[in-house]
Image 1: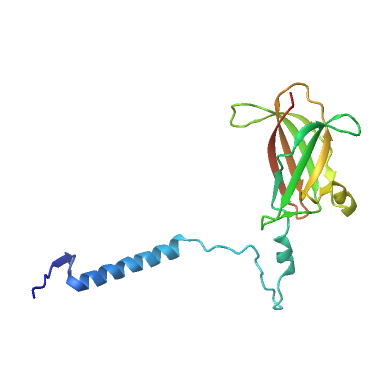
Image 2: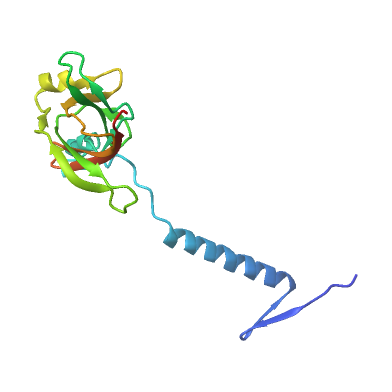
Length: 192
C-alpha cells in the first residue's frame, strides 16, 4: 500500500500528512474560540438583581425594571367631534411600555404638542401650532379617569379645530416618576 506524504513548509515548521490536519484543525478551533470570546457581548438579563451588602436583593433595582421605558401612540388616534360638547377634538391613545415590552399603567405627566408637518424634509417638524397644558396622572383617581383597560392605554381628548386639510405632527412626551422623559411622534391627517 502506497501512502502519499506531502510536506508543507510554514516558516521553519514542517507539517506532514495527518499532523498538518491536526494542527490546522487546532489553529481553526483556537481562532474560532478567540473570535467568539472577544467579538460577542454577553447578553444582559432584563432584571439586574444586584445583591446589597446584607445579602438581600436590591428591591429598588427590581422595581426600576417595571418603570416606563417607551410610549406608543396607537393608530386609533384621530381628529373627531366630541359627542358631548360637539367640539372638534383629537382623540389620542397612548400606551406605556416597561423594559419587558408589557403595556403598563404608571403615574406620570403627559405633555401634548402639535406641529405643522413639513413634507419631503429630513426634519418633518415645522412650526408649533399648539401646546396643551400638561395632564398630571400622578393621582390614582385622575389616572383611572384616562385609563382604558380594554386597550391597555390612556385616552385623551384635546380640543383643536383644524383650519384646513393637511397633515400634522403630534408629539407626546411622558414625564416619568424616575425623572425620565420619553417622547413619541405621530403623523395625523385631518378628515376631508
